[in-house]
Image (cartoon, rainbow, N blue to C red):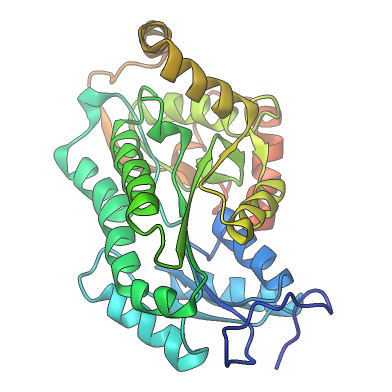
Length: 329
């Protein structure tokens, strides 16, 4: 049996159980999810990784195992009705009851409203609202039995501020934020803690995994720059450490990046001012064009994007480290 990254383990076992605590992380094959899984392993958790792509999961599992993490993985489309049963069965078979659920899986769709379709909104809502809802519901018996079970929902500043050219993502994250905060109130006193994480942009290489609509190369350019430049984005490893600390302490909310914190406060105190600023930002972004593209992978859009390579250096470097697809392959 592999050992955790550090020799010490916090005493997080359930009463009557000598086993360490078990965590399930969705969207764990790459990016922030993989980093959260690594951080949890360093705190003594056994971690079940969940994502769609079996090959990516195996690579993530090997990488984490090489660092001493005790992990297993289950490949699953979380939007499928049977997904919660399948995933929880895998957790129980490999590790036993669940103590911590991290709902991290998501998709990013970038483009003007005119280039989007209803199916894009449905896909976003299924992935980032209904899938976490179903999985949380299925996990609650384990989490209640734990006595100190936890749910961590990775939402977004896009769930507080309606960022233009990201409406499917924004709609789903607004809903996910409300669900997470409501669950915190509903489950109070049940022994289950719910933490809502509200990140801003993070350097994970997500620009190559996002999907682009309209003038795809132009949309890729602004999003990739924002997700890579240090003044606008946050180091993802630091974010993962903060998220795990918040989960262990049972914090109700964690807002990551100064921009996200300021934006959330301004939206709450001066919504009209925020709307005017967002209107200006929308006017500066690319139009849909005469023949708008639909659902172009970021790795493809990046090959013809009018963007100097140095702008995305930090984001590309993070993507190579954290398993995101590359734009130059």
